[in-house]
Image 1 (cartoon, one colour):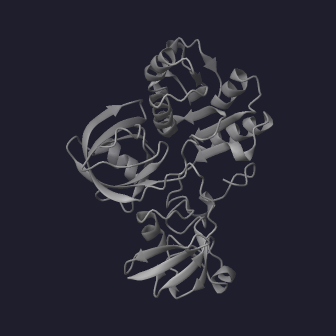
Image 2: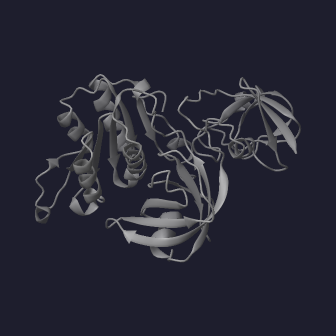
Amino acid sequence: MYQVTVEPTGDVVDVEEGQTILDASLRQGVWLPFACGHGTCGTCKVQVLEGDVDIGDASPFALMDMERDEGKVLACCAIPESDMVIEADIDVDPDFLGYPVEDFEGTVVAIDDLSPTIKGVKFELSRPIQFQAGQYINLHMPGVEGARAFSIANKPSENTVLELHVRRVPGGAGTGYIHDQLQIGDTLSVSGPYGQFFTRKSAPEDLIFIAGGSGLSSPQSMVLDLLEHGDTRQITLLQGARNLSELYNKELFERLAQQHGNFTYVPALDNPVPEDGWEGFRGYVHEAAIAHFEGQFSGHKAYLCGPPPMIDAAITALMQGRLFERDIYMERFLTAADGAEGATKSALFKRI
């Protein structure tokens, strides 16, 4: 075992033989910035100040030769070969609770068709999990190489259950397994929680949630958690889908809007079919946000979760409506299939 000291915080992490710096840190409640988790995006880049390290399978796009010569490594790939001191770009939000990553066994207790392309899966855990609303877990599936990340859709007080919303990705091994092979009673390995997508409860601003597709999972958890704890800020959820069959959990949010005077639900369909009989907003979800707030978003915190085109369009709309980078948060998963190209950042939003 080696010890890695993280500057500037001074945290000391015990790293097992063959374990990466990132995995050891997260499991001991020491947060390091990261995104993809497998060496393709460069988010977890740190500077080695002292010690020896195996840089592992870092992509040459994420860690260039010049950076390697300067002593930089990717924490998600780097394996210590001695005690080390590293320097990381750490900017932890005061609302981040920093729950350590742990391993769990989850038994499937329910599988539901939420829409033609999205399944809702509920796991009963072997023991309680601590997480913040908005965070995600990694799910390990038999015959599928590598873990897959899924946002947690239930509220943190339901700590022995995990609810996941899984959209079928064409050709995706992980989502294909869940849609075609997973059965009630199956037990899978889960690790978590992960992520820096969570509600800033100490901030006074009203909240806007913009969700598309299975990206509803994180905002659902956040909204349920806020309402359960009696948050008094104005909370608006805008949910986008192509047609009515894809607009899942609509009844849940309509019921919550009736029960809570500070919660507003705005569904939007961009391609409703005639039999939908749709009388709500027609258009994309960012257009629904512009219409609902009359193009003025200042004085809010915004949380975005959905496919990249939706997120980019929403960022543009919010910033044109006088909401700036410091008040916009988002979650975007990067998979091994994305590679270095998938790790590119929005030209509109440099912090993402």
